[in-house]
Amino acid sequence: MSRLPRLTGSEVVRALQKADFEIVRQRGSHVYMRHADGRATVVPVHKGEDLGHGILS
Image (cartoon, rainbow, N blue to C red; front, side, top):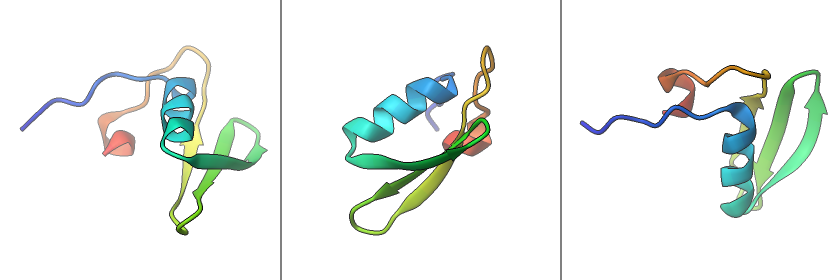
């Protein structure tokens, strides 16, 4: 089983934007993103913290 990289919330947002996700809205430190095919996700962007492997999976 491969290990997931340690990424910050802003790095995940940039990666999802490259995968054609768009930022729909932001509430506090949570960025709501949606893809044109209907998939959606919420990314917590807390300064100085990496996302856990459970969120990345």
